[in-house]
Image 1 (tube, one colour):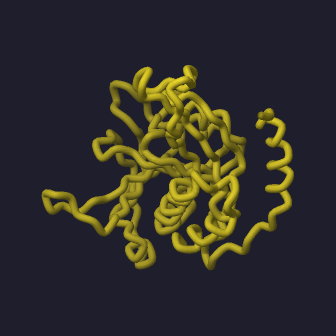
Image 2: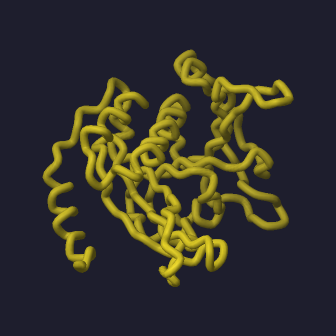
Length: 235
């Protein structure tokens, strides 16, 4: 009925008018945090462009960059269902930004690209991630209270066969979820970041904020009140 692209400047202008909220005690470093994620949206069979599984299972994918503490989207795009989330992240990234992503975005080369753009990032990696340790970092009582069980500075992320030594140090932080697997072992998240200056507890909090984009994506373009309630419940 109309060209939705014409609304982009309007949305950007309105978002720019929103006040920046005060950070919670000790969390001012997370004010710029942006969560990025993609979600599948069911598509009609006649939408031939919405490629996903096959002709009878079509879907579009909504990609959103969401400012978690301002509780508003700052960028969005719609692609075919099979489109790469990492490609869309590269489109959203602005030099100097601070991004948090799930393990679907795991790409060691992408992490280096973000660092080279002077971006901060926190991302989840698989439990079988290969790495070389430079230093084991001590944990504080606040780190442990946030669920952190291990904190490492790395020499390499990836295997020696595929990846050279890092030109700078990255970091892996293990965070307990409080859940147990079917075999009885504790479930933990392994987070990679280039922020060596932040307390491990803040790395854990940053990833916890990532769920804001999961909760809000179906609503984030038009339900501010709902969104703010969800954000406050995550803090």
